[in-house]
Length: 283
Image 1: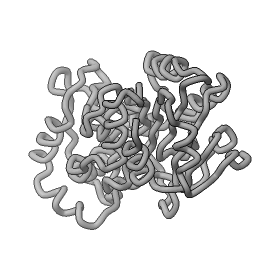
Image 2 (image 1 turned 180 degrees about the vertical axis):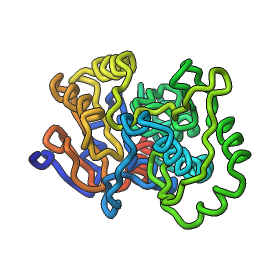
Image 3 (image 1 turned 45 degrees about the horizontal axis):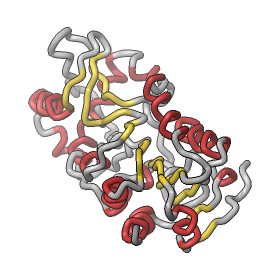
């Protein structure tokens, strides 16, 4: 169990004072996208969720049919999501030369949609699909059109009545009869180009993240965490790396995080309001 951050506050003033004049690397999580209508996994009021694991996905056709039926409904919603003020604030901070790089645990692609350029999609992108047979990567829109043609009316019959998770998984209970589309090149099984639970993040991607955090110095750098509970090691390890190097850490998140003991300041507030105010400060 972690101790409280050295400064937990609802007033972002202390965070702004600490971050002033520093080069920033941002680490974002699902809490940043809630204002875009995409629910998070562990925020206040979030319902318990059990995402499909990689081992389950590759276990057989039945599991993949269940996944794609639910994800097809969820994609119809996620593709309509727009960047919110938090995404736009981080893009503005990048344009101003303050945020030098961004690591996101989200798969929704909203940072890029907001105009952010230096983004490492740690867990991949839900708008891409990869074949487990030949490795071909293709656009999710292409697959969505094929699934719609194979399953006419399926999305319309379910989209109004179910919730959708941050990875696009919609809580559709009846998936029997859903037709799954194979790879157009080799006929292999398709998977969203994201890292499932139980699957490892590619080593090269992890190395790039460590290098980005490692470019910060205690003198003029800081790590800004926005909208992540840091429950899984995938993101927490970079907070630990920053703290181990003596680099200041600021966390903006509604509710406690696993990284609170490592933070100089945690602002218990919404990302849109805090990041928007940070971006509006004089450079």
